[in-house]
Image (cartoon, rainbow, N blue to C red):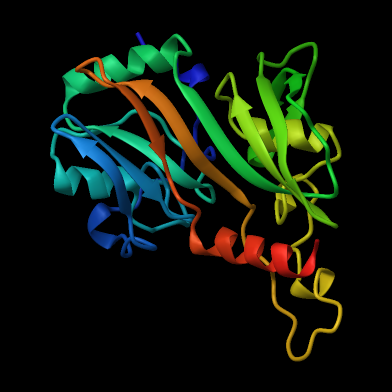
Length: 260
C-alpha cells in the first residue's frame, strides 16, 4: 500500500469546505505541456497556480487530475506538487501503471530535482538538511525536532548572483512544503515565498537605474520541479525534465543581465 507521507502533497483544505462542482470550475490556468509519454504513462510540465487535484473552497481552476481524466479516463496522478509550484508531474494512464510507479514512490526509489531561486548569496555544496517538520494551523509547516516527521533534503548552489542564488534541491522525503521550510531554516527563503518570510522581489532590486514603473521579478514563489528519474513499467530507466516556465526564465534573464 502506498504511504502518502512519502509523497509530495498540495496545500491542505478545510474538511467542511465542499468541493466545487467540476461543471462550475473555471478554465485551466495556463497551457499544460506534455514532456514525454508512452502507452501507459505521461509526464507533463504543470503551470504554476494549477492545482494537482480538485480543490475545496475558494479556488475554482480546473485541476491536472480533471484535465487528465478528460484525456485518459483511467488515469491517476502518481504524486502531487504545490499549487504555485511549476514543473514535472507524472500521470499513470491506467491502474496497473499507477501501481508500478506508486511502489517506487513508496520505497523512495524516485529521484526528484527541483530548482529554486533563493534570496541572498549562498554557497551550498551538497548541503544535507535533516530536520523533522510538522504542520501548524493555516497550512504552514515548521521545524519540530521532537514531534515532527522525518524530512531530508540536499541543496547545491548552481549559480550565485549578487542578491539571489539559483539552487538545486533534492528531497529525499516528500513532505508538504519540505523544501521551502528547510531553506527557511538556513535563512535562505525562496524568492516571493511570502508564507515563509520572503518579500515579493522587485526589478528595482537588481536594476539600479530603472526608468518607468517598477514591476515584480516574479509573482509566486520561485520553485520548479525540474527533473525526475524513475523506472517505466517496461523496465526503461526514465530521465524526465521540464523546462523553466516563462516567469522563472524571465527572472533568471534579469538576474544574469543586471545582478552579476
